[in-house]
Image 1 (tube, rainbow, N blue to C red):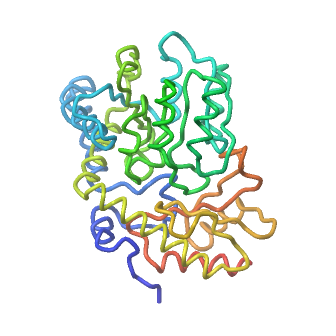
Image 2: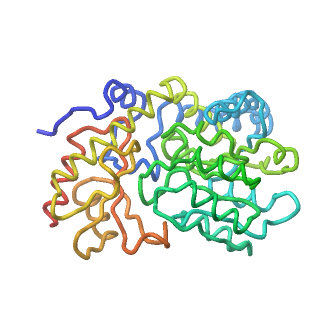
Length: 369
């Protein structure tokens, strides 16, 4: 019998009760979380309002809810109510593109980033004709390496991804942001994997933070946010497009409200517990065939498995879904081209993950060893 022990403690029952039951073993929250009934109701209620009253009147009526959501974003970043500008965009990728296109004084010339930067972010930067330079060093950032790099060459901005897509390492974000600010270099933070997952007040002193609705907050897809503070906020305009899917934004607002109601600190602790328990069970059950990349007690729920023999991880992931009903991610080398040499299997449970879910994955991977 599957072990029903919840890995997140008391939060597991609440998380399950407030959303539709799972159709598969969902270990893919870093790609897209499972939305709650409140999120689904917010989206459908607004679509009905658009049908009954017209889209523009419905959008005007929704404005106060979205303003509250903006302040919730600020609070999760450690900002005060009304501080800076919070804009809703289509996705995290769209947020980065909009920030660069609206950069004061024109497009930046040079962006500095960690060596393990998220590949699609670099693609956006380079597509705009902006140069990039990497800070050499280990996967877990070394603040002194950033200090040395900035002393040698001052870029227009530093871009930091708070939590990677390919390895669940919690980076020393606050320390690196402090180094950049001491050097007088603006900082842009990708919080797509961190927002609703980790304590993002560590990004408090960044100039720009952006993220998405669909991952750990389990809001709708195609909704993101970008928050700009300080002197940069007064010189940055036009980030939010008025013609947008307001229903999705209201779903994001409902996801934020649910996160705040659960308690961000409790959610962070619950997800850290899920990640640690998952790593320990996978390391013990798959010894000799797969390696767990992160330290076993790394305080994130992103778990990375690296096969010890050549393996078609994409085909394996597809077979796990088709045969076992287990959803994971094949993390390809394009996610971090300067660090990855082969694809990995990413496992990312949420607050509803049980010991039995992880054991099912262990059994499925053992059968394919």
